[in-house]
Length: 115
Length: 115
Picture 1: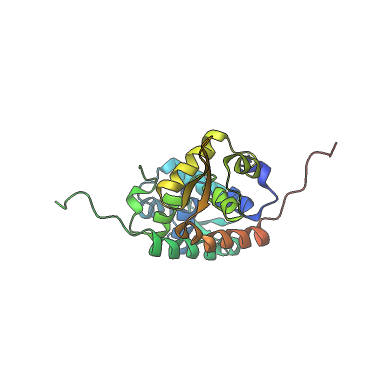
Picture 2: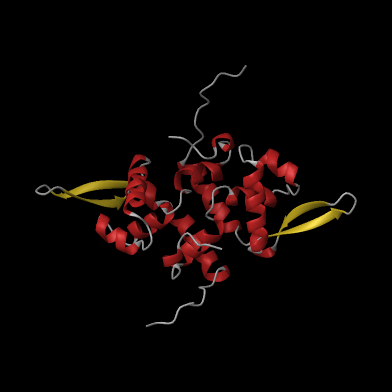
């Protein structure tokens, strides 16, 4: 797979971002951690993602060994996704982003009135 | 500015990624932390980035209050960039990515022979 930071491979930060730096990837990991495991559930929890992007991200996570696909029904075939231990090991990255956002990126005020 | 995760604003992780989730942004912050402050230096340290992208990223960092531009010469006008305290507060995010990359994303072997 092509790497975004091909000439930065000496740096562990760049190597991490080559794996989790795509748009939405960390939010997919966030929601897998929260126990959303089915494609349709993830599509709801990840409001704003397109089915195509979600599908691509899940495939990448599987290829990179961060998530695994399990079939929980044979007829019809239905799959769910779960974090692997390697995917779970990204918890400190999610926590650092959570903490920074909580302290330094306050939620913006709603700009449209509720109807 | 448009947000990637417009419908995820209740989540601090999404709000953080709206600020630092663009390609290259965290690596620009990494190099500002290392003391690279001039555009030309950053262009060298960030091997693989284009001048246009570097320029855009520095502008965004300035707009978001993560970096500040300082003029160190008037004739000719020359600027350098430094981290603000807000930019510096992203250190735990960089550290988490560094640690994860060190442990879980080993440096790939070189595929081309040295000449």
